[in-house]
Amino acid sequence: KIIKKEFQYFLGIKIDLGKGWKTYWKNPGDAGEAIKIDWENKKDIKEYELMFPYPKKFLDSGITTIGYENEIVFPIRIDFADNLKFFKSNITIEYLVCKDICIPKKVKKYVKYNLKKYAENSPKNEIEEYLKKVPKNNNLFFEIEKERINQNSFLIKIKNSSHLNENIDAFAYVNSDKHDVEVSVRKKNGEFLVEVYSESNLDNILEPIEISLSDGKLYQVFNISSKNLPPKKKLIYFF
Image (cartoon, rainbow, N blue to C red; front, side, top):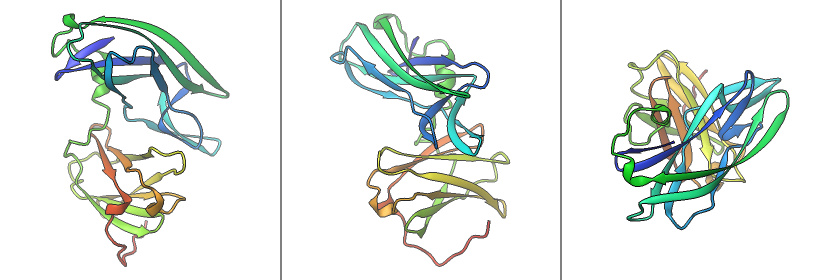
C-alpha cells in the first residue's frame, strides 16, 4: 500500500506474526536482527527511510530483546524522482522471526504505483496508524535535562512528567557496529529518570545516540551527541 501525506509518500510493509513469534526493532537487544530492504529500481528514488514504530521489550530465559509481536507495519518514507508519474520496482525484504527457534525470511515483492492517483491526505489506513507510533524529534511532549554520570553512562531527567501516564518506556539506538547502548528507567519523587549506558566509553561513540521515549500514548525521540553532554556533576541518585 502507499499513501500521500503532507506532500510525502509512505509505503508500508506488514508482517503478521503467529502466537509467540516476534520480529525486531532497529536495536534488537541481546539477540535478533532488524528488518532490511533493498530497492531494485534506485534511479527513480531520491531517498527513502525505513521507519520503526515504537517497540516492546521481551524477556525470555534471561535474554532481553526489543521488537514486535502479533503484527507490525513498517512505514517507508520515500522521496521519488522529480516529476515521476509511475513507479515500479522489485523490493527485497529481509527480516528475522523468532519463537523457540529463529527463522530468517527473505521476500521479494513487485510494486507498481500510479503516483498521480494518490491525492494528498489519503484515507486513513494501517500505514497512518503505525506512523503515529513512530517517535518524532519535533514533538515537545517530553522536556529533558541531561547529566553525565561517568565515562560509560549519562542520565536523562524528564522534567515535565506530571501530564504523563504512570509509566514510560525508553529505548536506545546508535548506528554503529562497534558500540551498543542500553537504557533503564526509574521513577523518583514523581520524576522519571532514564539512565543510558554503554560498555564503550561515551567519548568513543561518534554517532548520535538516539533515545526513544513513550508513555504509551505519546512518542518522541532525541538525538544526543556524547560531545554535547554536560560535565559530570557530583550528584548521586538512589534508585
